[in-house]
Image (cartoon, rainbow, N blue to C red; front, top):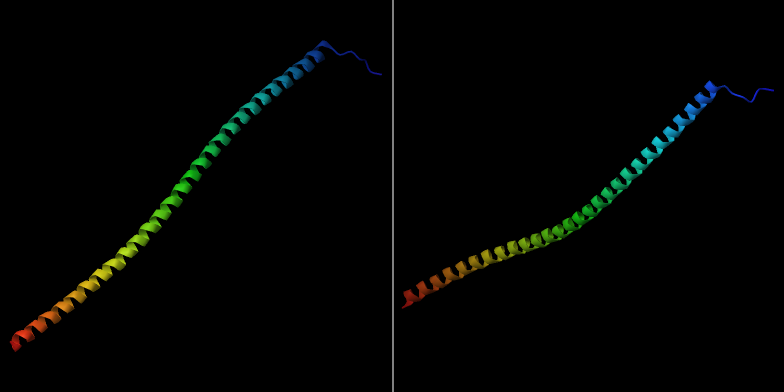
Length: 109
């Protein structure tokens, strides 16, 4: 059987390895904590950006409806403009007929 005793140098080397391992564990825990904090901040930022995006999407939808309404109004104005032009041409034609009738009446008189 082997001896259960270890030398002072071996003990110190083992102690040093344990201390290094403890230090590595501390650093890993600090890094994990920092990463979790950064992740939480990033998630909060993503949530805020998603909310802003949703609000802008809603605003875009409202603007699209307004544009559609304006296009329909403009289309209606185009029809009204065409109707006004048609009425003006008709008025001019009636005017010419009335002038011709007045000229005939004057010839008769």
